[in-house]
Length: 350
Image (cartoon, rainbow, N blue to C red; front, top):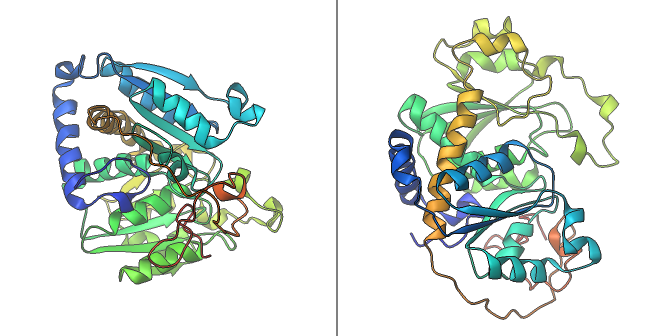
């Protein structure tokens, strides 16, 4: 499959993943063979939203491949703070680089950026929408520990409304057979409707559980997430949260299978007790290590692609009512609609 950008797992197929995973396994086993693989290549690291693990992981990945890095980790350090459009920022950054990694608070911004870049765009998180490179990490970890991706029951626990990592994980696992989901979320933070619609359209099986204890005995993989308080809107107050049923403790783990895998995209706040770290089923720090190697694989693939001229766009005319969609601020964006009639940037219903 010809893949130019990595915005969502909808951009790729299972064959593309198999190829990337094979490269990941080889780099993991023979890292010294790749020390100069990206010599002379430049990564533009554009983080309009704060990040530790993802930003460091990409930087470490590029440096281990022998490449260079430039960019910013604060939007105030970019010309966007002066009023420059996202389109112009991408045109400039792609002129100087061979690949762009970007994170933003605006949903659909990575898709929008890909319309104005000469080089591949990698989505490192766009608001509460998607986080596909974290999902590469998740898939690599599951594959390494279980030997396969299909035929499993995955528990998604925590903030499923704003948790972009779970949205991306569901999108990715739709490509593999026999995956069932158990969704475990506090009231008001359930999986958003557009993701439920995605699952229904693909015949994905899921159940809803009201607590961790109710679900643990049936899970092969437990994917914990933190509460995304920074994304709450005015209709949801933090004081309403009752999280006791959604915190993983050593005591609750007694009802889980002995070979269940516990994952977490990190950072952790208080949703996993620290005593759980010593449990052999806790794999979230190992998961973070695999993240650097799978990003090395992705960067190596994309930095080898040729530059492509930016295609002129019929600008304007896009209407989306999602208040955090990139189209709300970048009004020149062309109309973009999915096959199901949703916004082509943020995937929300138009």
